[in-house]
Length: 231
Image (cartoon, rainbow, N blue to C red):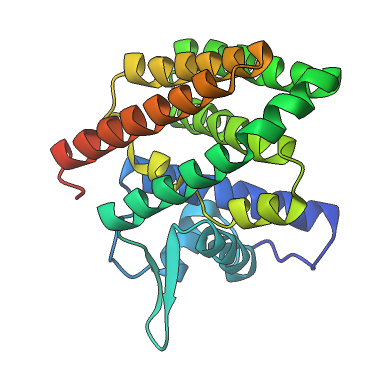
């Protein structure tokens, strides 16, 4: 058993490892929604003590993947379409509200341009080539970073913090093996169209591309999860 002390580097890396492993097990379906998490079984599976596992589960609670039921313990949270749909609605509202400021910020900051372009390049390469659950989750991590960068470019740090609490990509954990890779790639191509509108300073086109991306994402996610009997 490996115990960790709060705040030390080794401890933090162990929690990161357990967090990653639990998330991959949720994605693979090894850990199922609405089923109580058996802490001793996880200790055996990950060869560690309950301390880093509980810390990782608390992080997953903040990500919207795990819930703690009083006197019953942890369980994987069941996804609901209403929750996902509301998240998309809020995300679109925020992105459209900050779109003019994003255009202004990107036009005058080469660092922002570089961050967007690096994200798009890395995300496309990963989306085309991933073969593991970890690669898939990293693809959607970069997808999330694109949207977070968009809000950050709006210049409102309070909005950026609020946006982070939306858990806008919580759905991605359940998409592995249920969504064709071509659909993942098409989503990144839509990111390119959004960025092209930003670079061109075309506010109307940017609003249009944000609408298109949100609607397409909603449809792809809904049908992928519906076919997998997760909704």
